[in-house]
Amino acid sequence: MTDRNFMTLDLEMNQPSGKIIQIGAVIGNLASGKIIAEYLCHIKVHEMISDYIHNLTGISQEDVKHGITLDQAYRSLSQLHKRYECFRNPITWGGGDSLELRNQLGWPTDEMFLFGRRWIDAKTLFVSLRFARGQQHQAGLARALRKFNMEFQGKKHCAVDDARNTFLIYRRMLQELRTQNLGENNE
Image (tube, rainbow, N blue to C red):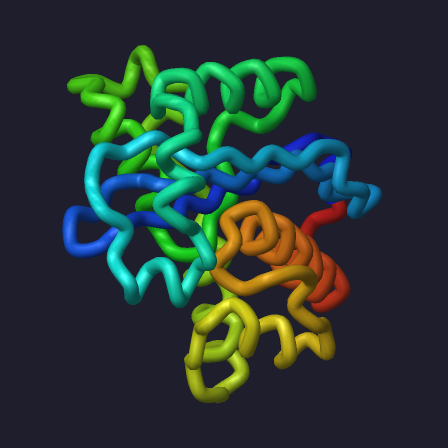
């Protein structure tokens, strides 16, 4: 397993607008499993937080009122990513969080964007492992963790907790693949 640092990224968004209201990130080392840094921020939006999202995430109107701009959050993520020399593409649970971040920043091209145009989708890997084993492909993060005898750490739908759990399950899945020696030539 690579001795490299990776950033796991998670976003929470308001509904129905889809605006980002919380960003969570975890920097972890895949070889050691050590969580090196965590980042959580609320994003200032000028709209009401829906009751559904408030009940789901616990994010309040006060949280976003006192939040930071999306640009400020991106700069903080960039600094963390560079400081810990992370692999370019972030790990996400499901596709699109890094793409959504880029789109909401309003950047028309990938060249400026730290994460490029790709991400590592841990959810797709989980579903693929389930298919390969002839098992049902349910893929909610908390339930997926239980399939590996792991418990969700923290509060569901808190971006930093989701990011941490995504890192942990991704690492576990890589360990399983490695022990199965899937055609590896021991490079």
